[in-house]
Length: 194
Length: 349
Image (cartoon, rainbow over all chains, first blue to last red; front, side, top):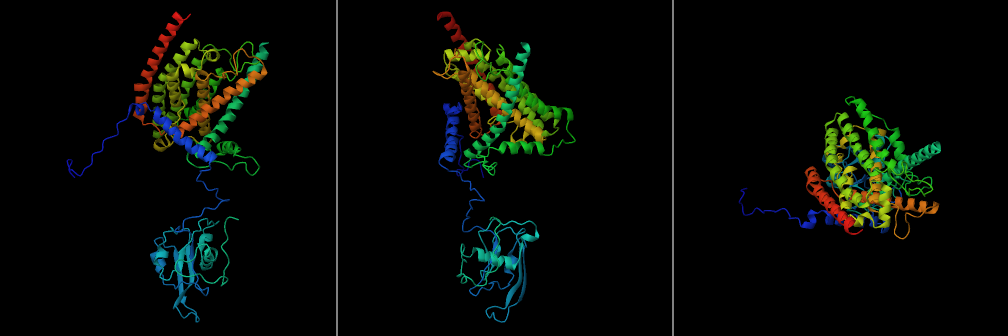
């Protein structure tokens, strides 16, 4: 690009008025701004802080937290063990062992015998959710998972299904209706905050 | 008789050291609260809640315990004697300034002289002198750390302190000319009889207060520290209580500077229609101590408020401000004041 290009926009630095060059009027203006914030927090409760353990932060609906494995209308796991999520995962944190579907499941050939997600490796990008053709894996709004060991943070199928039981009322499945209540609820995910 | 005077002075020293140290601990809490409020946060509010103490009033205890119990790392490459000496210089120079600061009424008719060394007739000069010594703590820390960032911090501090000593000293000269004394008690008395210093020397007040920010290494002039560019500047290599001592020294300096500001420009313990130099007795003494500490507290809060308002100056701007603006203005102020004082003394009386 040439220096005399007519498309170039030349920006002049702003000229300071006499008051600006004495700093003090601008200092007073700045003090007014901070005073507004300080007094706002003191008297009008404008602080953005959430007092966490007592008050729970509610993330936005598109927040990507802990995974869950969705169940269908009969309470079976929806996953068909197609491995698309494991393939899409950039962090390689999903480990699926597929098996031939049991006799009574005519709608699919395979189901996941084991479905393990390492929540410590996961980067919560949501690619698994994007890749899944049957909407079986979803990321929920649960963000406060803790564990005392690395092993504890590797979630197996039971635990991922239990996340669904915990969150299905708050976050309905995005594309299908949830199963009727009381169908095969597994052990609920223990909240770290009591 | 002299023994009792000595004991009285010792008690005063103990009380002042204790009160100022305790105040510093709580000033850190106040600063954190103001910081949080200015940023629309809440700030510390948990410490002590379990035992029913509100407003995190136990936070200073937790901070102090943390400082004392942390590992005290002394890097191998430091120049050890100076490295160990620097925090002590920082804290001692900050504390000995209190020797001549009156924190209440002083005089022959008062029941107690609220001053460790009463009626020192060069009091203000002494405060300025020991206040300037504080730069040795910073420079030695920067030099002894053997770390380039710490060294840059120390060098910046020395340049900054040398530059701002000049407007600091010259801006108070006007007030000294008017009051006709270096003794802080007489300056307060003059203000009680006539008018507060900020009314007769507004320019002097602005220059003094601005230089005081530079002298205490507070934002917007905290270039020796500059967390972002110098990773903490002169105290980069200090840990645990040695770091805490620099912190303590800085806050003690803020208290001293606030005292000087209040005494020189806001009438010290004087409040119009409430107190006067003639009052004696316990009630008026307590009232005056309360007035001066309230004023000092407001001044400290204002200094903290400024910190969270103004960004740090660039180094050339800092030097420009001192040498091209503040020193000429201080000179003009001094000459004008001297002329007016001379005229008034000649033609008024």
